Image (tube, rainbow, N blue to C red):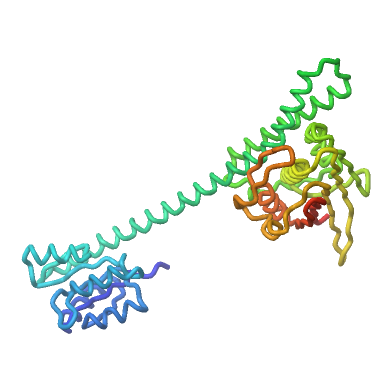
Length: 370
């Protein structure tokens, strides 16, 4: 149940406080009272009323002085102040508004007028708070949109590159391509196009690719990895990279989100190729680990490329500009790949670890419950 609005009455005349207090209580408001400016400021150190009803003429600190102090304090500056005073000249009213008040009521006042003014300013305050929350929500949505676009752009890079390279090969080769190779390249182009379409659909249907709803299915991990390696085969050919795969079984069925695992594998393979040297080697190994009555699938992707500098390794998963590096053949990147990949792995309740030695290579370890 919502708490009633809290009103702070500040007046040095006890009769005025008793009268106002009774009016406000009759309308269901909660009330705090202070008979001096000093007491008012003490109350504000621990309480944040919704509105302050403030007398102008008081000893030591008058209402204008108190209003100035309230408005200079970051914690209390947004509390609406309504001046209550027997002084009714235009200059005094104007001064009150200049000191930060939202309204000025002249004594003697009508009970209904006081309540009506309070209700108006409580509603204005609520609307301002709603506006602030709305702006904050829009800013969050804008950040999500920017993050989403970065993820989509990054994940489209690998399938688009495969389409371009294989199409280029088919168009530029002078010899007739044997049917088996043509079928393989056509299948890769089709699968790459399918992945791009999936990413576009995600862009249309969800706010965050990295944390979108999981679609768990049972699928063959061997087949999934083979499709991912087929996707990057032309990239490997271009750098004369040998790609080796080793599985503990010919079929390995897992319960995961296949599209997210595809994104993980594609990101890691693209990274391995990007930082591999000419005539390099990439090894993919899949094994089953049994530990404390739990079964894990361990996937390792190892390359013998340029490795990761020691100063970069501790923050390698951070989403920051300093993580952007050019590949061994000038390949560009965004610096987002490993950050995106880690989020995807965590989304699948998995674990990712990286070990690397500069100029010797990098191994990425993935662990998922079987």
